[in-house]
Image 1 (cartoon, rainbow, N blue to C red):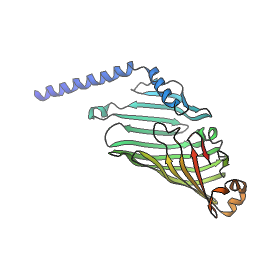
Image 2: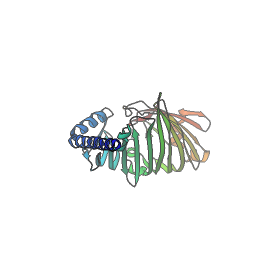
Image 3: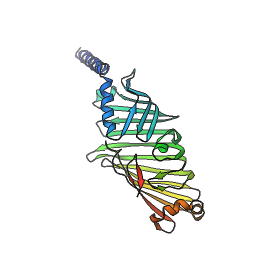
Image 4: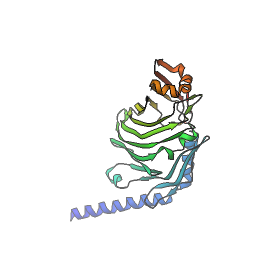
Length: 279
């Protein structure tokens, strides 16, 4: 009898909690969310349209979402969605999932606000041609399929972990950072890793290898609430073979000041994510 009463009490408590969460969700004004998101993004110099709406399951979504800056569109998603998971709440954990559909690809994130396991990320099949950032910010044409997977843990010193990164059959042309162009390349093999330690992210030797050229990009990645306006501190090493250098000798003439040794160019990348430049 005592066990039955305890079970009934637990069921009633769970029902009350679920109803409270549902009513809180139904009464939560999306207009306030739009204002808060717009205020946060405006500090980065970007906007998000259209307005957010609620989903059938407790969550929020943007259909045909478009992230833009003064240069134009940066990122477009057929659907961008965020929702809180109810079941983990009964175990004392607050977990939010997010997902974005970009062309034929996807980006899925699971983030826990407390506990050791903090974040899981899975992205695949995202075509760079479906990301307007390359055209609007870099003035370039880009192609390739983006894949990324990894997880982060929460510790006494902040978040830590690794995110693997790969772009299959990467190619780009017309890239210009400030006054300096980068060489046009095709069919690059790439691999790299973003390592997070103490809450700070760093791109660890992202390698790009193709016919006649080898490049290596590394440096700190802005990852806090002011990522869009945080100064970049990155470096791109370019090692062309003589025949590749000859084909694009004008580009390498402009990059001559960055030659560290014969056939090796070390190019510093500064500015911000929305206005990267070579000085």
